[in-house]
Amino acid sequence: MRNRRFPPLPTALAKQLSTIKATDGGLYRPCVATLRDGTVLDCVYFAEAQRWFRYWGVWPDEDRGKTALDIETVASVADSPSRLPAPFADALYEAGESGMGYTVFTVQFEDGTSVAVGTGNAVDFIVYPPGQSRDTVVKVLPHVGRGDPKITAAPPYSWCLYDAG
Image 1 (cartoon, rainbow, N blue to C red):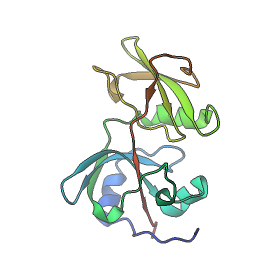
Image 2 (image 1 turned 180 degrees about the horizontal axis):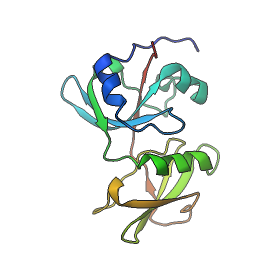
Image 3 (image 1 turned 180 degrees about the vertical axis):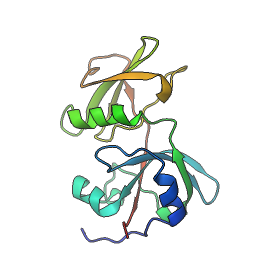
Image 4 (image 1 turned 90 degrees about the horizontal axis):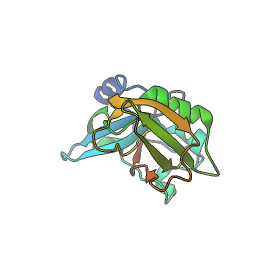
């Protein structure tokens, strides 16, 4: 069902999203979303629906490995504290997947510590170790960390798609 319709991006959300640095060639905007009922969800990818479908080939609500969020339930968005800085995420996207359907990488921090992360093919969100944040990231090492006994999984995330209008 390729030609599926999604609600358009509301003007207020478009303005907020425009302040969030996109990744993977502009495909994704990794956000924290506040819903109309007051619920705050970190780790939400916002993306234009048709462009997203051309890349993934299946809608998020038709893939049991994905979670979808309806744009009409979103009141506001902001930059996510759980995201990697965009240049580092882009370096991982450019490096490509580590194996069939997964990506492994290591994030290095300014104090010399690091964390290995395993995820699918969306790499923007990680669980930061205590005392670390996106402000302390200094480098990512694509495809490094596969054998690390302390490898961490990326946090769960949702997809929020909209029509470009």
